[in-house]
Length: 197
Image 1 (cartoon, one colour):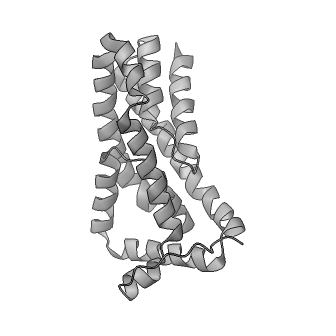
Image 2: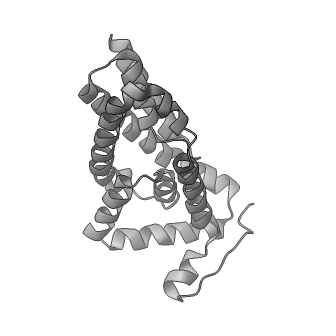
């Protein structure tokens, strides 16, 4: 039975370690909880732990990818954005919690944090609060909906899941193509598509 919880951990980790917005990790948590009739609280604890490890690993490798594939000016731009986020103190933490509570992919948050070389310990505690809360609600809702498994599977390709993916991609594009220094310092909105090396 322990191997089923290991699947939950590995599934959540794999969903959250990639730099591209995949479906939220709670989808694999709900699926495995229903499939194996697992203890809901253990699924939440183990799944959130896998998500946090995945996001932590993402923050470690994304600066290497960004340094290799993006221009130096774009990396400096995102690092500037990260410094501004850290200057906000508790307000920055509140934004991370609020963002983690929303049904939006958190990939852009961790890509930005990693590119900005923000210490993961600044992001992860607030992310944990939001992630644990939102995943608890979602996994419980999944358990409730397990009596209607057919409609749950239909919902996997609903307008909401497609909209979530689109918003995640839009946020990643905004992170990469918006000139954040110009926006924050000069209050001018500029796009820069010449970011690749």
